[in-house]
Length: 238
Image 1 (spheres, rainbow, N blue to C red):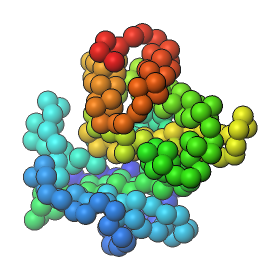
Image 2 (cartoon, rainbow, N blue to C red):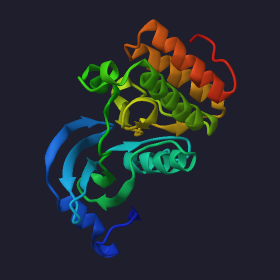
Image 3 (tube, helix red, strand yellow):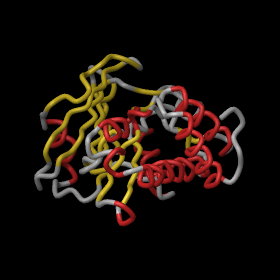
């Protein structure tokens, strides 16, 4: 059975999968073999000139108690992007998601999202000339606060990112000083899933972020303070 989801695309419904599948661009994540199939991400351009990212997968599935025989991985990411965005978590906007049976690979699947224009990886922003050194500690504290609040909103909805490395945290700062607008976004929700409790989701992700980031001790303590304030309770082991 074919599955499709589309938002704001001018391509006719019956042509959308083939249209996006046929698009080609620069590989930003080379195809790799895992989960019994192949997955990679290309940068492409939509009909309106919008920069897009297309995750292309063949035979790439996950299994769960709900889907013991396997389900295309992009559909789990679609569920996560839709779910967390409803909670006010800033994530890439979905343009198209589809999965079709394939005689050779069992499934072929696509997830197309809009580029996070103006955003860059948090660590790249910190290292850049126009990053923390230029914006100042006050703006950086607001970056930490916005990151904490996005994570807390996600976790309070029981969503666990499950792969929250610092490279999956993006930031955009517009303007300077007190008038600067700070926005943090999360990417790569392929492994994101809902847990039984908000605390389990929070504990897993926050400890994982600590292991896979290079925050200064003082900055990590500020992030934890902002996070626990937004989440509403302390997390052991942070």
